[in-house]
Amino acid sequence: RKYMHPIYSRLNRNLHESHERKKEILHDTVPDFYRRLRTYRDLSLDEIAHGSGFSAEELGSFETKRLPPTFAMEMAYCKACGGHMEFE
Image (cartoon, rainbow, N blue to C red; front, side, top):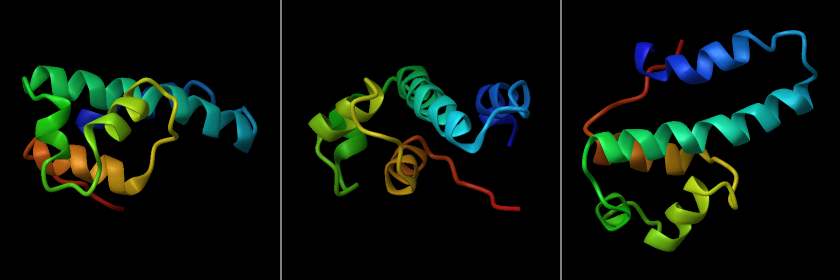
């Protein structure tokens, strides 16, 4: 969970916001987080796309916020970066 800190902290600062506004915040925050993670791991969009079922163009659209975040895309980034997702 500590790696998702930027997302959690942004949502926690906006607890009073409506559900729709929280969705907008996620749509804005999640792609930035995964782009930074990919850059930190020195991976290309093609490397993330390989074996994920997504094209590099789709992932690029996700990172530039033209496509909304999806669970499957987030899993592709986690898998390629050697991470995993935890659920509570």
